[in-house]
Image (cartoon, rainbow, N blue to C red; front, side):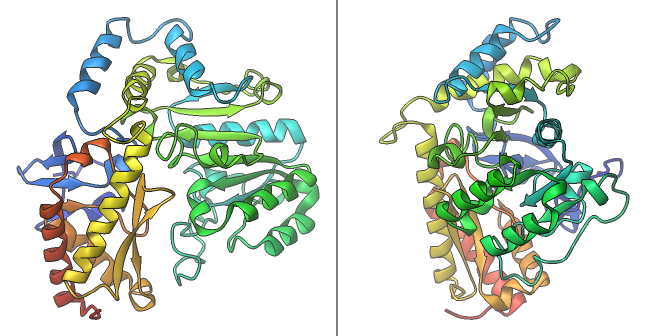
Length: 417
């Protein structure tokens, strides 16, 4: 199995009987592998699935949109309708459509270069897989004090990442170090890109000051809300906090798994879009626009006591994190690992004591223990919830997680609480 797929190393971590899992279908908050085993899914395709797999209401709404066709000569009224709904809180803003956020970030970097005349970039966080986004990058999802965070990666085979086009890492989120980067490379810098997930590592006040420093130096600022926009709220962290950023990239959770990303900005910046060639053949296909409209139709509705789907996701993710933490207590390993919600609960992550944080083998063993007990989630990266997880059997989740943590404790010699 899987001998023909050139896959990333992360997907190889989802294994059974020492073989990589291949999946056949999903339903709600679960997925089924080709061997018939089912798993509670907190990977959610790494974040795009926000309603759940093959949920009836989404499938029905999406099917109705499909009767209008798949692709027109240009953009459609469905693209326009989606932007009208998405950007209602930002009068005058415009949007450019892409398939992936890596493409949208590339578009933002190109706009910044056209606007400022400078090609250098300051980066903080994982902002995509294209050369200037990932080359000489770090393990950005690791905590600030993790021994794995600082190691540079992806240094081979990358173009356009030196000289005037160099990308500089803002690693520690201290304003003093950001000022040093700006002062040293001011004449080359045109853009500052911040991964909104890292907002959980700092404060809104620090980010507001960082953006002000970059603006004062003439940099265009970009908030990459790929993980957060459409998941923690319709437009994400920067908009919710009123942070003054020039461009916003949102993606992943917009369309319940269909590939779509949107670059958002003021008209005077997006006017560069045509000259910068910010489009491709499939930027205007309609499947993703239909899926995004269908997802938004559902997310805008009240759910139980929650005013909308985004608030409900926060409630669900918070409860999932609490359940994993309770399981850690039941397994006697609460001093070694626990879970916490991220940015309101649309995401959650595992947190480790310092001795476990620096032990990659134990961390990978924990992931395998969860998979062996029918739970798929991520480590060293936030995990994700969907609305269908609101129907989770919480006692069953806690029982599975407790068994997994006990198994890990036996193999990994985890510390008692």
